[in-house]
Image 1 (cartoon, rainbow, N blue to C red):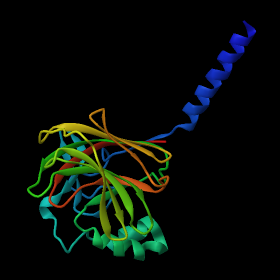
Image 2: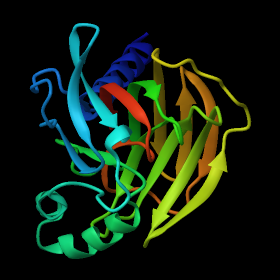
Image 3: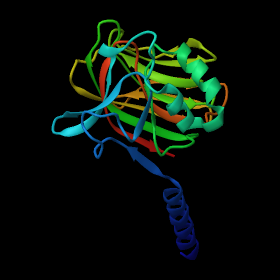
Image 4: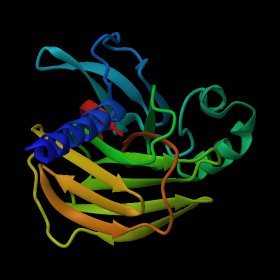
Length: 235
């Protein structure tokens, strides 16, 4: 009986320690001003604004005003805000990715292990209808992204490295989504193991070449118009 009681106490202590160690950060634009640039996301590339949808503020990437040679207004200031004196290389690589808008979540300095989740709504887009989770963002502008493309109906992992975009892994099953409806996306990272989920269904699994470490955010492509909400990071 004493052994059972002792084992139970040890187990409860372990569970409590894990619960205390785990940390969830929610990044949203609820308190930001509608019609203005977001405060809680830093739009590095693209045209990011806060809009109202269903009576609440959400984040929007508006690809309709995307221009090839204008990746973002005030790019140098935003790069400096993220990486300080190391921002020059960051800017050079960001310009090479001008077709791929992204915004960095504030308050998450270094994501290494855990989960990143969000809700998204595909609104419009003639070239693309893409929404994604950006992670492993480095001081030189390199990053990884898991995205859903409403033109292809699939979940895909891409790498962006030194000005080169490279396809890594596509989920084996297509999942068509309707426009202007909310859906969920999540990635789970444990060491080098990556999993990608769409609406709670695991569609992507991949062994990364090395552990991740960097900033995180939301991602899009070319003329996509997308709403984002409920961005959470648990680690």
